[in-house]
Structure formats: structure tokens, C-alpha cells
Image (cartoon, rainbow, N blue to C red):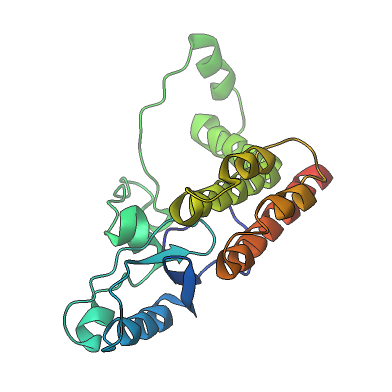
Length: 219
């Protein structure tokens, strides 16, 4: 599954949910979900509905090839979150540069003005150490806002995939990305007529949004 670059203790990480249309047919870790889905779609009474498997944290879809035996299907799954970027395809990573292979240091070009280089050269440890410290500090200071953004985008991504043609979609989207901290009772009213499994899954995603936004305010 695709993992966000932000660090977050959300229980939705490392799990996924499978939907056939608006019905949730499986949930849990990827291998568990895939096993259940394959059993469902191979039933003689299966109507042939397309199945979407969502990463529970990002709501990105996970591509799975259900052809072949269960063993073959499971062997074809990504073995880790890093391997599931871009819809289950192995992501190409930068190779560690020379000098500090155990730390996985990656060499890239950084373009700065002369005064910036002058300032960096005067810092303890030099430019590289200072830049790493600045990056880590920026990540910590913006972690709450990053989590909130990822959570809102996840809820929206799921809504587009399964509820884009439902009544109230546009209004619910505006509320989701609105600025009012107490806006989610209104959101709940707007989606009250949506299919039960969709609403239940959205509640989990919205809970992540509210928790992340609260954390960003407290930071």
C-alpha cells in the first residue's frame, strides 16, 4: 500500500478496504483482504461488479491481479509499503550515494544564492549537516498540518471513487475542505442518504481528519 511521507500513528495505516460498488466486502491487512475478495469474486453467484481496494490511510487504490491460484495472487502482492507506490508497482528509489552507505545518503544538486552558501559554510558541521537539521525541523513543525492535509485528501479521494455521482457530493466536498472546525455535523447530514457502508467508511476517514486538525492546532 502507498504510505504517506508524514509520520502518523493512525490505526488506518497498514490496512485496506475492498468495495464492490458501494458495498464493503472485506477489510484488514492486504493479504487478508485479497484472500477474501478472491473467494467472493470466484463464487458462482458473483455479479461481476468491479472491486476497488483502498489503502485505508491514503484512499489510493491498490492494483491486484486476481488471475491464477490464491498462492500466485498472494506472491504477486507488494511485500512492503514502499513497493506499493503507483498502484502496487515497485517504486524506483534513489540509490545511496558514496561516502555514507549505511545512512543511505543521497547526493543531489542544491541551488542557492552565494549569501546562502556563505551562511551554511559558517555553521557547525558545514552545509550538509545544517541542511539536514533544517529539513528535520521543518518536518516537525509542519507535521500536524501535513497529517491534516493527507487525511482530507484521503477522504476526498474515497468520495470521488465511490460517491462522485451521489446527491450532495459537491456540497459535502466543500464542507470537507472548509475552514469551520465544527463543520462535520453538517457533513454527516449531507451524506446521510448515501449507502451505509460508504457512510461508515467515511466516518473513519473523517475521524482521522478531525484528529489531525486538532493535533495541528495544538502544535
